[in-house]
Amino acid sequence: MKVGIIDCGGANLNSIYYSFKRIGIDSFISNTIKDLSLADGYILPGVGSAGKVMENLNSNNLINFIQDTNKPTLGICIGMQILFEHSEEDDTDCLGIFHGNVKQFDSVNDLPVPQMGWNLVNSGSDNRFNGYYYFANSYYAETNSNTIAKCNYGVEYSAIVKKDNYLGCQFHPEKSSNIGEQFLKIFLEQL
Image (tube, rainbow, N blue to C red; front, top):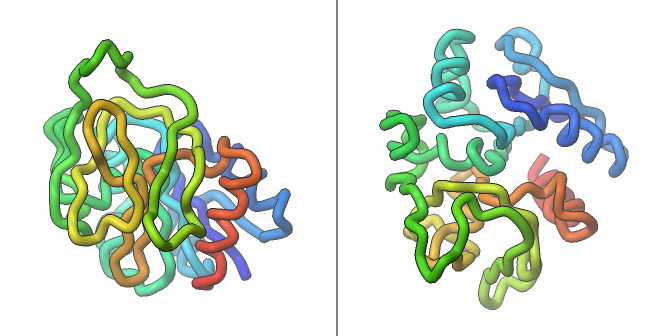
């Protein structure tokens, strides 16, 4: 089993790489179709801005590659957000795999933006995902028919979304200690 971490210009590539290494999974970082086509599944990492990430994917001809893959694909934080149709961040058209838009947090109830730190994820009866995860985000995806877990930060939003072979999480599993590792293992069960 080999996981391809798609280099779309983010800063957390190595932390994701080492997360997989800690749980004994072979992974590699690349931005070429030639390399990535050898992977059994993909990670869209989670640091950067929507506009810059989409620009990098476009310049490396990876947009259609990601949209057309039937391999398990996990978007983390901004990697999840770009799976939607549009983001208010940089007024960016995204990949359109999930219906809906990504919006900017308003300062509600004196909550600071960005959200930085641990927050409770609730997946209802599917308690595999319930617990506290680490978040670092100024934008959020509204809840929709693909939402399988929610979070609240002045507004209820999608913490985890799933559609076909695509899974997205707004939190950073690589920074979420044991529960984050468990989340990555659940994703790896699809490979």
